[in-house]
Amino acid sequence: GKTVQALAYIASSIEKPAKVLVITAASVVPNWGCEIRRFLPGAAIIDDPRVIDGMAGVAFVVVSYQTALSKGAALCEASFDLIILDEAQFVKNTWTKTAAVVRRVKAGSRLVLTGTPIENSLHDLWAHLTFVNPFLRRPYARLLRGIPSFGRSAAAAEVSKRAFSSLIMRRIKSEVMGNLPPLLERVVHCEMGERQKSVYDRTLATFRHLLKSSVAGRVPTLALEGLLRLRQCCSSPALLPSALNPDKVESSVKFALTESYVAESAALGEKTIVFSQFNGIV
Image (cartoon, rainbow, N blue to C red; front, side, top):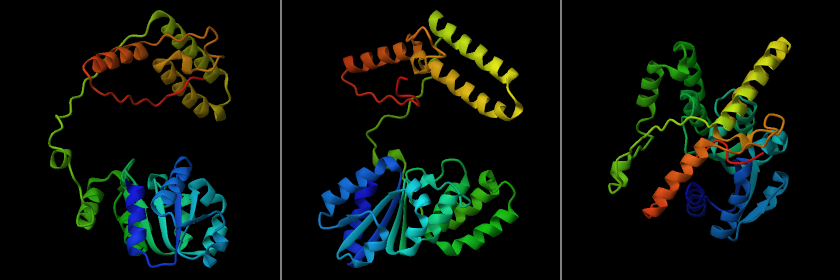
């Protein structure tokens, strides 16, 4: 939806010829190309920002954040009518190298697209707002100096609310989809089976041994990997590399329980969406 709305804005409000730079997540770059060809079939999509000045009509340069970081010099040499940050949660604060590069790009207008304007702290929101409105950078710097722990401060939240309440439209579910039932949360605790628990215990023992015998510099990395592997094992031992699961145990109480809930919903003609941090098997 955000992509199509942005293209509609370009088609109706941006004077032609127009040069547009889109910076987005690598996984979304192909989608932008498809949507541009579908909804703005006359627009050009080019790879080299240095030749965009000679293009007629609407010309797009669509790159990932990683590409923008590696080719920042070429982007900063060009001049655009509009720059769009899509999936802007990738620019989480104003101190990252990516944020520094996108701020240096010359553009007449700036647009931020994100479904999560605050993912970690207030810094996320201010990173977006100071990109779109560069004049806010100095007030933001003063607030950082004046309010301790700005990202999670109640005082900072109140200041931000007063400053931007007129710029933000918030709609709650009951206002736009009154036919939906209220949210119901149910926490289901499940115990691992014997084979899954055996793999979990072996993984835990392996990383405890590695942590005890490792040099100090590797401890944080090993600890984080150990936590990741234990979480994977809780979902399904099949997610683990073969070194941690040599017997190729696949039994998973979570998976079995999820299958039973999905089967119940299917029998009632309901639709089910399953969210998981791990969706592949090693």
